[in-house]
Image (cartoon, rainbow, N blue to C red):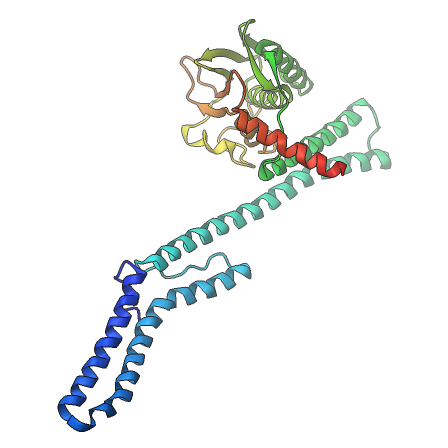
Amino acid sequence: MRPLDRLTSIRTKFGVVIAASVFVSAVIVWAGRSYYDARWYMTFPVAIALALVVSQVLARGMTSPLREMTAAARAMSAGDYDIRVRTTSRDEVGQLGHAFNAMAGDLSSLAEAQRAIVANVSHELRTPIAALRAQLENMVDGVTEPDEEALTSALDQTERLTRLVTYLLDLSRLEAGAAGLHLQVVPVRDVVEEVVAAASHAARAAGREVTWDVQVPQELSFRVDTERLHQVLLNLLSNASRHSPAGGTVQVSARVTGTTVVIDVVDDGPGIPPTERAKIFDRFEQGTNRPATDGTTSGGTGLGLAIARWAAGLHGGTLDAVAPTPPSTGATLRLTLPMDGPPPTRAETSVGAVADVLDRQGR
């Protein structure tokens, strides 16, 4: 029973408890003086007892939410994140209850996400390991010859494992917030052409023929971490080549908008449905509505775009999937970066964190 739940302040509730106790005591004493006259003082014990009963009833209703939260906190410490507390009270304790339920919901979502990550990582690691083991066992047993094709296939699986482990390391840095930037002023076209060369080589090795259309002004430059930017662009171009049809074109363009550089990567593939454009940046999300153009799955880990967006954020920029510009119907990934690099506080904080770690290790 919570008779004071409608009151919006815990101080008001305490005042009501005190007032009710005093009122009950006064009524009992007044009744004693009226009916017992000379022996009215004998009503004092009764007045005190009834005042305590009233206080106990009202106070129990005030403290019951706290007891519920204590029990819920103990259940959560044991791993039950689905428990919730009643939040009928309108005072500060009720607000605490709402905050507690919100925290429990966040922890439940986090626990579910962690379970999903473990399951996905296990699956992603098991697939190339199983394929590599089968190939090596076949070569050892003499089923297949250790020729160039077999060794290249085995090498591809090890490269996939290496890429996945690298992604997972980057993901751990993302969670810890410990990732430094080594900023320098570089021509945009030089970086783009270097990444296009790497993506073109990877596409040819995978048997995909893609035409690359680079539209980047020669004089355009910005202040970035070239290795991080290379990582972002290579992921975008690799995705674009996988989703483009045979003989398709991947366009890379750059322009200046105010104090930012906008880089668009556009492919000739089936595009990304509007409902999927935000989801593709979620971890382990591989765009189920957008398979590779060869009819297979995309072949990605579902981590690349999440890490690419994180790297863009480190620079003070953004990475988004936007609606294609007619006549294009393919996917358009837009990278926006400040020309002068991230705000000083962002760069100094990230580099300073790494420097502190290295300094402590040196000691």
